[in-house]
Length: 295
Image (cartoon, rainbow, N blue to C red; front, side):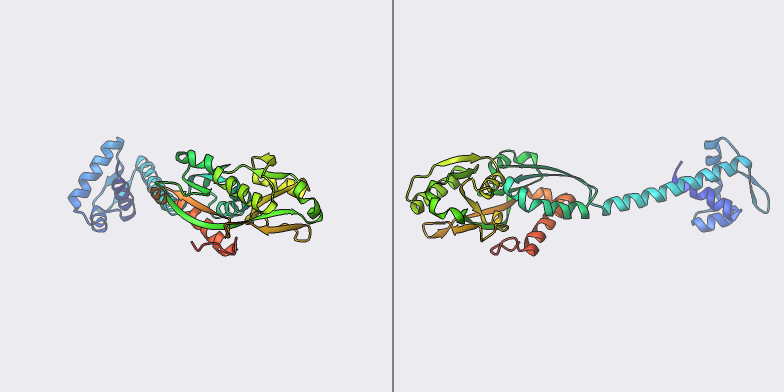
C-alpha cells in the first residue's frame, strides 16, 4: 500500500462520493474507481457500499479507514522526527588532547559544549602531545603543543611564555632546591637546560621527574622544589609566596604554541565543527593569555 492510497480512502470517507474525491485529489473519476477496487482486493474486504447518492462505509471499511489515518499520522510524525534529526547535532566526537590543555582549558570548554549539544557522545584521551600525534588516526580532532602536525590542518590557538618559579621564602636556598621536571619533548627540555645553566651558573639536573605538568605544579605548591612552568599554569599562583622569572632563550622569550589539528574532511561532521567553534570562542572571549592569537 502506498501513502496515496491511504489518502484516497480518507478522502472518499470524508466526501462520500467518487466525483468529489476525484476533484479534491485532481485525478479522474475512473482512476478513483480503479484504485478503490485495487485497494479492496488488497485488504480482501468491501470498504464502501456504492449507492446512487453516496458511498457508505462498511464495518470492515471503517477498520481500514482507521488504519489509513494511523498510517498517515505515523508518516507525519516520522517526517517531523527526520527534520528534527537533521537540525540537531549528535553522534560521536573523539578528542586527543595534551595533558596541559586537558587540565586547564578543556574542562570549561567541554562543559559549555555538552550543555549546548547534549546528544553528542564525547570520547576524550588526555596525554602527552607526542603520544597524541602518534595516534592521530584515533581522533576527530587533536589539541597539541609544540610543533604542528604534518598533513593536517592546524589552527594556531595560543602561545604561552614560561617562567622559572620558586618559593620566595627559600630565595637563599635556591641553588640547593631540587628541580622538578615534567615530561616533554627533547627540544623543549634542552631549551630549559640551556636557560638553567646560564642563569643558575650550575649544571642542570632534574632530581624529580614527573609525567604530568599538574603533578609538577602540585609539588611546587608543596614547597618541594623549583620548576619552569608555562604561563597558563601560573595564573593562580600567589605572587606573595612565589617568585616568577620570565625564561628567555638568547634574549627571546621561551614560547610554546598550542594547535588545534584535524583533517579538513572532519568539518563535514556537525559535532566536530560545533566543538571547534565552541573552543575558539572560549579562548578568544576568556582572554586565556594576553598574547592569545586571534582565531
